[in-house]
Length: 248
Image (cartoon, rainbow, N blue to C red; front, top):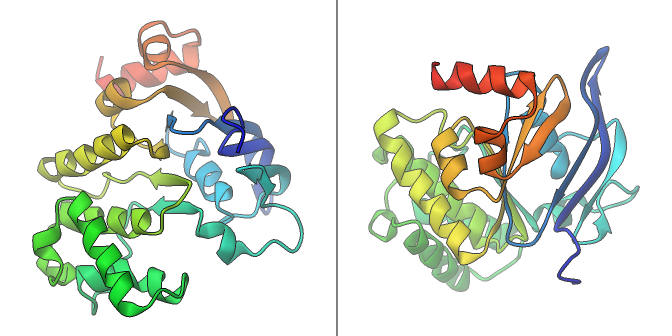
């Protein structure tokens, strides 16, 4: 792949749910090893845009390319596409009857058709990366919310995706558990993982993001470095949102 070619290249994305239009021609490009953070008020279209990027939602209009391949083209194998795009949700979506190891190994076995022994070795390594080697045999109800989310991240990275999409990964967690998840995300960032994050964790965005996008009413209103967006805001809508979330 050309080093300059985006991992994600979404052009003119529109999305409607019946008569309700949620996205109004959004463009999103994400470069290799870039961490893009999407902020904005509830209902602004952030999560819908993210879900369009792996076709959990089919765009009403526009095109999406992943590493140069158009995934919105007719006849595309969606399951094949999703192997290249990891997704971490607000809810952890773990199977309650399976151990942490089993949850991480499942897609390796069922989707990638990797033999059980090899899949479990890869799953152990993914759990090690998120600091949960010692919880491999634990079931979800034996884990804290933060640990469950880290298992979900391990499940995503075990598939060796080109990009991981994070949809409000800490919003369901008690405040004292958020830090462990953000630390894993920092380490992924340092390892060169390409990431798109929808979140209200503004401090993390300021510290870790390469680029911050502010969305409102289905449009990207402003984008730039964290310094530009947080400290040199150009738009009143961005300024108003940031003042509300910071409590000023």
